[in-house]
Every structure is written in C-alpha cells, then in structure tokens.
Length: 160
Image 1: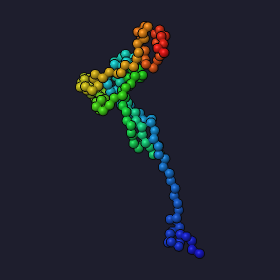
Image 2 (image 1 turned 30 degrees about the vertical axis):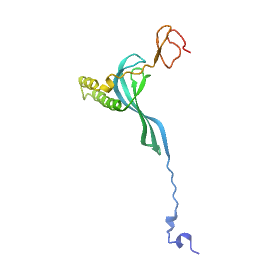
Image 3 (image 1 turned 90 degrees about the horizontal axis):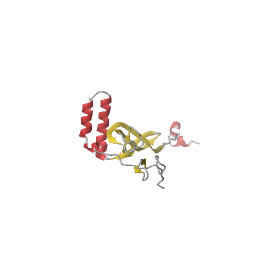
C-alpha cells in the first residue's frame, strides 16, 4: 500500500507542518523629550524660565518592537518645578521643535547666546504664551495655592 505523500508525488520532507505566531499589541508609554523649547512664566513656582517640549504618544508593536506611533500630543513642562504643564498644538509644536533644536545647538556651542535670543524673539507663537493659571487664592490670607489642594498651605482654610 502506498503512503499518502508518495501517492500524490509529494516528497516526505514537504509534508512538514510549520507553525508560528505573531505577538501584536499596543501601549501608552511613549514619551520623547525634545529639551528646552520656550521661556514662559510658571503659575506654579512663579518663575520665568525654560520649559521643555515633550511628546506623549501611543504605539503599536510586533514582538515588542514599536512599529507605528499614533495619538501624538505635545506638552510644555516647567523645567524649574516640573509640576506645571500644558498642551500645545500645530504651529506652536513646529515652532517649539525649532526652538528646542536651537537650545541644543547653543548647548553644543554651535550658535551664540545672541543668536539663541534672536530665534526665541522671532517665534511669535511661543513668545507671548502664558501657562494656564492652575491656582486659587485663599479668601482668608490671599495666599496662592495649587488647584490640586483644597486646604490653604498658609493658614489651613478649607474650600470644601
């Protein structure tokens, strides 16, 4: 009696069955820091200083290798206190990326401080930007508290 493979002219080695699987998934942990990108007054620490541009994104991966990014969002974050941040959009993102590149060039000694100030002053989209005010004033002592608190840090007055 002929074996199945030989009756159809199939070689013995070609009847092997190979099995494989693909591990596919997505994650929300993508963060890219572009470095300093703007000079803004912070409503949290009340200092005017450099703010960093950060991109936060979701990504799809195959075998834990990132393939594509989606749902990109950009934020400016205070370098001084790190507590305060706000989202920026479209033209502001383009300008912030150019400014971050200029800050890096200044750090490497490729451009002078005057050139850096000229680039910052030229960028109208980020020049007059102000961090949103995320604080409340105590009605008892007029101390400025963060919105994340419900008790005044100065006098202990509760707004609840």
